[in-house]
Length: 632
Image (tube, rainbow, N blue to C red; front, side):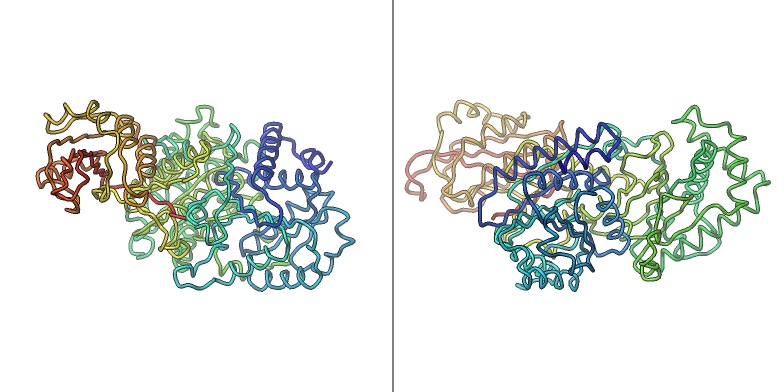
């Protein structure tokens, strides 16, 4: 009943089918993993702006049909996002009791005649108040508490794990989990790196991960950040951020100026077709002072454009951007119509510039339900961290991005991809970005695809693979004691090998000892790794190395592998990596390849071995990759 009522509010048949599949499969996963009197963690994985809220509400409705009564939906500590989510839930789940964070008094046993969902911000005071209410009223006694933690990687995890302390939000959430004998805690995110790198000991590692695919109309990483630059991307100068920060003679850098004209053409196109909403996101930095400089620069440039609409330079530059957009949309309105409408928009000052950061939140009237509504008007939104999570950007057609970092974090940067979504007019979307940042996002997209393939293949020990300069997540939420880091460019060998499958390996590779090295396929490397043995998994974890090889193969289908084979080695036990200086130099010369060196040791007792020959592996991955997972 509840599920059918919910999907009846959705007029997108494709989305309805997706929600049905997700709700059915996810509920089945819960039944498979749940045991009475336990706390179950699960991870619902989607893509940035791919409809996670719609999927969550579908699962909640399906669970209500199965008899679950009380749900908590957590949002980040953001007034606008909390309001946006609360209104969405209220409108979508009309057969539920929907409570906001100030309505504790309404949560009574009588209230639970209907399923009840409480929408809370991840704010320490709010969570503490509700924890006390749950305990004092014993409202969850005998009931299953179901918690959906939206953007679970953002604020929920313990940021003091390496200091043997517990951060306040993490502590409050753990307390709420334990107000009921049975809790199902569903972590929801599009950037799961921090969640996947939790340990079993932390209490936050998911028992399973479920990935729901976006619909066919979704535009995501594969569309915007392919390995080869697409026509949606305009490369900007690497130093435009500095030009705005430092001021000087340049009023508006070339790339920023082009992006503003491209956005104005999008607005004119919308207006000519009877629409009154289009958005432009400028993401330059985390610093509010820089946001303010960009607000001033953009406002000054709009004023300049308004005063120069008769100038030849204005018309020429506008024509150039119209021609660029017409490449991907041949039926774009004639330039003369676009020109006249752009001039009209400028003359009537129909373009709003909206700074969006922590200070602008403070200034916004939280009692006004329309405090932030980007579904209306033609808006240029300028900000930093606030643009990274949760806030929905409808009709986002233009992005100017120049935020940089010496050690970028994969999850943080991927959340900046607010251009992803369903309602973009793909032929007119443009991203203005420096080439080096485009390369970063392309790398992140590849890593994200590998992660998703591992989830869909039901791989238990998911590995995160990134180039050496990219961190998977912030360091303060990953327990360093249990972090397993495999670094490219480093020789890893079995220090406690044991004889195993010696004759089989002989037949496979003995003749290759006559060569300095050979080229081979990654599958051959994997077959060899499956044959070698060590006294302990910790000494030489074959399955982890195989997962690394497979992950690299997915990331770089044409990855090269080198095999170095040496026989009749009379080396003593416990002599380090065993590699000769020449073989070490040879292996190190293949910086972009997977290198497996196989030494057949004579294994005499005089040298400390067991008296029989054995093969010892030594593997090295490409220099510029790191592999991350957790030991427990």
